[in-house]
Length: 191
Length: 324
Image (cartoon, rainbow over all chains, first blue to last red; front, side, top):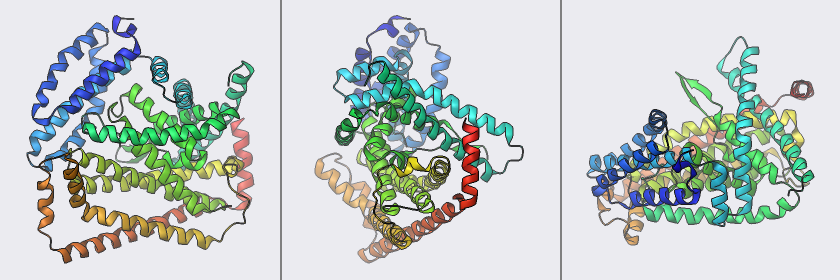
């Protein structure tokens, strides 16, 4: 746990938002000023002892989408400069957001959101989502693997149908899990 | 359709954030009553279901694959307010955990995929479904609702990008629409597959989702509703596709968003009025035809997916066995 990890979530969220907001407010012809944030972000990543390789590979996963979106601006007047500026802005914002995401646990963010008077229903949903998403993703993966193990001959139609069935079953199972969770919460004095 | 940071201007981002927090606030307010009856776990676990379902890749061709977005499906399975909260939670979590979609663009993303997707999906579903639908009708409605929700979300996304000056509407609109027409077809197929299997395993889950006890309207009602919807979509799309760059730039100029919006107008000013009108009509006709064709395909899909009576009991028995 580094200093960056331990910093309060609200502070980090504020800082990241301020940086991203500032970048968004920069006019396109001054987008290169945004590059000044790059050393700051990299030094923060080093301070947090994040693996730069992992950070960059995650960034590279998102980059094609940025490129595709930025290329739409190419058709405007002075398009090349504009699309380069947009790409630079969004690439730096993405790096900042990834830094925030990889150093801040979601439950702290939810607590911050709650302090910002985001409705309780939404906060609870996000908290439960964070808790159960890994569980259900694992279950979906298991069902898929089981299906692949049982199905020898595969046509595309059958595969889609099998995947759809698996997801339908996953929904049914999720609902019964929700009932159990609700009962357990009530038994422990929760809502 | 996740808009990253850096593409939206401050006004557009803040405006859409205000719009979507308004809608989300209303949904949360509506849900408060339900929460007292004890359904808070339902929302969280349903959100986790949507998140997990988005992780499952459906192979398309040549190594590409697609996945569910799920706003129309959530609308059909959970009802409008719950679906809104669930989809927003998923989008917020994707933003903060996977850095998928920007923080600054969060309001716009919640608007496109949450608000627009759920409202359009839910309304299409309800309109097509009627009070006490048959299984075939339900599956067809979900498929068509999934398509409509995807298209509507893409439209709104294109509008935001062009309002921010990140792209020209005459470029971004055809690009987004053509890509999302394909994605919408995928969404329609996946949603209908899921609903068909839920109907087979636990049909009462769908029936309890607030359907009245009124007698079933005839199948004709669905056909007419589908016809009306496709004409409405075409009528909405056509003027936007052909005239809106004009209208949009006028609006943005009036708001002082872009001082140099006139280049947007340049390609349009070459068209005389009559050719513009015939262009609108042609686009409307093509859009209407395409949507009608898709509606027919949705119906055929539903007919193919919903089993006949004898098979139904059998497959349910199998499902109960295998889920144990």
